[in-house]
Image 1 (cartoon, rainbow, N blue to C red):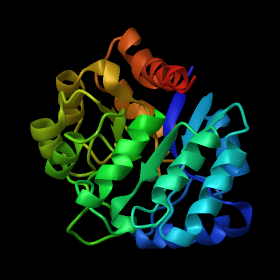
Image 2 (cartoon, helix red, strand yellow; image 1 turned 180 degrees about the horizontal axis):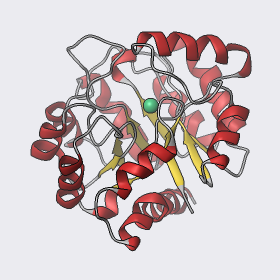
Image 3 (cartoon, rainbow, N blue to C red; image 1 turned 90 degrees about the vertical axis):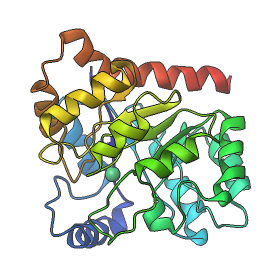
Image 4 (cartoon, rainbow, N blue to C red; image 1 turned 60 degrees about the vertical axis):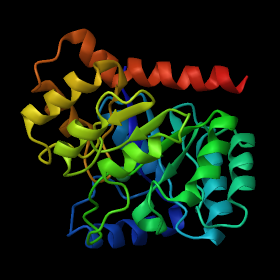
Length: 270
Ligand SMILES: [Zn+2]
């Protein structure tokens, strides 16, 4: 059983344009899918993935409703765990969090570089509080983003500061921070509510560093993720396979930890 906690797709009518634009913005990276849900699902199943989290981002106030309606529609599939999104500066951000919960979504994804707010900004305080009250998971893009010039909005020291105000499970993607593994080891590993996903690690993180992050943070809070369409599950499985993990550690990372997190959230909701 494999659960991929980090994938992306787009509504069919904008998928081709969205993937082409993001690919160019990130330096021409070659996508593994056509950007649609159908394309993603068939690629996931061909790669042996049973369930996958689809992460969407509202990059302005007006997109929020449509983004979350799309997430709710995808979430009707048994193999999809769709995350919602709120634009932090939206007047109705807190109401939209209530709607995300009512739609049956499990969590909220933030990409602060696209949203123009820092992870530890004061503005986030009521948003994090409402997310905790609703029993949702927070998932963030962490570290560098190849589509943007620095400064980045969610670096390890900033995430550590934000976590002092967070009472929800909080997933920092890309090994806790893309291209800032030293900061992850120094500031983030071991923090209690933090989960780290493995997305976009293949070829981007040094093997001894990945092993050190797992050892220091604890294998039970590492979640398998690919960042498909930008990386494939097979690539990230190759990286994990090179780390000398036992079979039970590998299975915890690939599905057990995510299943436990998702069922904890479902029980909170009941
Ligand atoms: Zn991603």
